[in-house]
Image (spheres, helix red, strand yellow):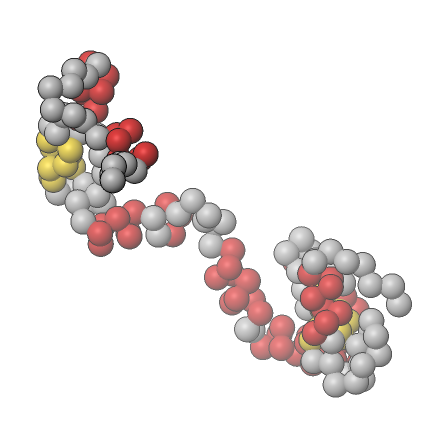
Length: 153
């Protein structure tokens, strides 16, 4: 019975006495280089082929937090959270729900508890706490508006 090597192993395995191109030989070198950590500034040693910028996992985590993270949007989530928990916003929400008699403007379901901004909360800061810019929606209709489905009522 002949044992075949897996394709991935035979493709990358280097045989004894095999001659390598200068490019492959360069890739195989394990030369160490000294670098400085971008967070704490401590010097550390790493291999030349690695792109490490930090000396430890802790510094690595700090390197991608806040404004250094690829998906950073300027701290907008924190600002929105602060605005939505103010007393003024809570009063706006209650005014909208009472004005609609706790009924969904989309389907008429009773006991709807979600206040929805007709004009965008983010794009219209002057209308954030205007009761005329709000409507009461049930969870299902509110999710439709988030997905861009226009509700006809």
